[in-house]
Every structure is written in C-alpha cells, then in structure tokens.
Image (tube, rainbow, N blue to C red; front, top):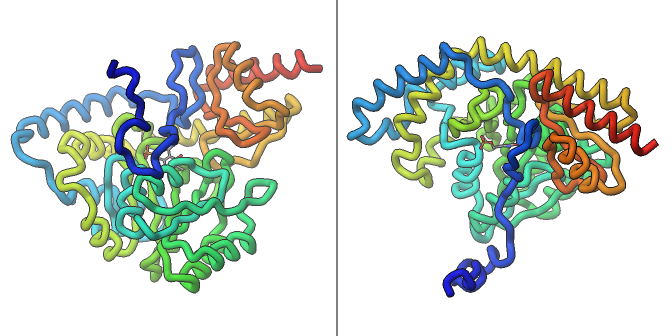
Length: 370
Ligand code: PMP
C-alpha cells in the first residue's frame, strides 16, 4: 500500500515536482574515478592526531560546540594567508558542512524566492540545485565552445537578467577550465552595475590549479566571495568542511540563516587536526597535479580530445555517444563520470595505478574502434 505512494503524491513544493536529486552513481567498482575525490587516504600520523583531538572533544560533547568555530576559522584564515597571497583574518572566514552548505547559506542570505542566480554552464550542477532548493530562480548562462567563459556574452547575460547572485567556478567542474582575474573583475563590474549583486567564486579545486587563487580580489569588494573546501586538496571529503573568505560583513550576513551549532565539535576537532598536517597533504596535491598532467598527455597521445585542466580531473572526448563510452569503460572496471555534457566524459586523477587502469581501458577502446 504505502509503496505505491510517490513523491508527487505528497504536498511538496511545486518547483520540486518531477525533479531528480543530485546523484553521482556510488557503484562497487575496482577503480572509482568519478567524484573528484582525493585517492590518498589520510596519513597515519594525521589519523592519530584526529583521534586525539576527537577524544578531547568527546569529553565535552554534553555541551553544544563553539557556535562561531573561532579556533577553526583562525586556522583556516592562517592557511589562506599562507597559500593564497593575501592576508585574511578569522573575521573574514566562515565555515560550514562542506562548501555545498556554504553555498546554500549564501543563497539563503542573498537570493531566495523572487530572486535570481546565474551560472555559466556546463558547471557544477549543485549551484542550480541549491538555487532550486532555496526557491531561487536559476539562469543558465553561456560558455564558449572551448568551455571558457565568454566575457562579452556573460556580461550581457548579467545585464539582461540582473541576477542577485553570480556563480563563477574556477577551476570549473566538469571542464577543468580556470578563469582569469580580468574575467572575474569584468563579471563583478557588470553585476554591480546591474543590481548590485553577490559574485561567488567557487574555488573548490584551486589548489590543483596552474594559476594563483583569485582570493586577493576580495580586497575592497564586499560583494565578492570566494568559497573553498577541505574535500579535495585536504583529502577529507568525508569530513564535510567547506569555508568562505570575504568581507567581514558577508560573514555577519550569513549568521542570519545558519542553524545554531551547525558545525559539530567532532567536525571542528577533525578539521583542526587536518590543518595541522597541511604541508603533508599539499604534498599529495603536487603528486596529483603531476598525475593530472600525465592523464592529459596520455589521453592526447591516445588520440582523444582533452579540455585544458587546472583541476584534479580531466574532461575528455569527443564521443558521438558519451554514455555508451562511459558504459564500455565501466565494463573494464573503471568508473568515470558522465556529466551529461554532450560528447564528453570526465575522469578524476587517481593514484598512478588507478590512472594506468583507466588509460589501459581507453587505449583498448580506441584500438577496438580503429
Ligand atoms: N564546488 C564544486 C565546483 C564542486 O565540484 C564541489 C564538489 N564536487 C563542491 C563545490 C562541493 O564540495 P563539498 O560540499 O564537498 O565542499
């Protein structure tokens, strides 16, 4: 009886009717290169340090955690100051459960019902999904054939739609393309002229980039926010810790929507332990950048097209039927991602062994086809 009742039989919001949730397949396959995770487990000394810090936190779990996560925000600010070429204070940093929650809080604060957000697609699908979840209208902005942002077309779209929030993803997911500072400044200028609106630069993958972070652009621009995550470079996707850097007023503004005590004491303790091991973790990032560059070179050598990548993944093609190719690669024990970009698939840089398995699979495919 109850199993016959579906979502659409419930009194859900109209804009959610008939929609699908975010869902990268979680399949049990030997080589999983589909969700842009870091393939390296945390090093043992860090695992020990996490256990120590969490044990300490457990002693006061009867109490709510630090609602403002001051120690963690101070450590994140120090990390940004050291690595992004710009001095950032704890009052300019805010943290939440993954950058997805940071982005959700930004949309709850600056967008919502009756307001609009724009992204330049293909890009990270959650921007549109979080917009939907917060009742924000979504505008799919244009991108060039080579997946770069067309500054003229993008600024024209901003002038036309006058969005309240503008998403710029750099490096972009799923294409891997980075955005230069000039483009961000042009979009920011257009967004201020049109509304003014908030420009969110999503730098989830920036540690893997050949280019420096766009973070220094927040200086003197209170409507420009940079969002970051510990899910990729810090190899801690399971931790769920994302953060933003912006003018302190933005940090004050998101307090209006954040749930009290949203970051658990266990999360704060674990993130602090990971930040103590930043140098080791950034060493893995260097190895992954080299593997990413190797994937690009080997895919080109095997006769595939590749989009220039500044991330820990590579978009490759072109295929008449990308989904059929995705399936053939899966049949060879390697899970990559079909993001629905016609003609293209995306592979995450894994360990050298995982990448070899992927390269063997795609080389074999090419042979079969010729
Ligand atoms: N931004 C981009 C561009 C992403 O690709 C992802 C994760 N795939 C996120 C944000 C969210 O990451 P998290 O919530 O794990 O921080």
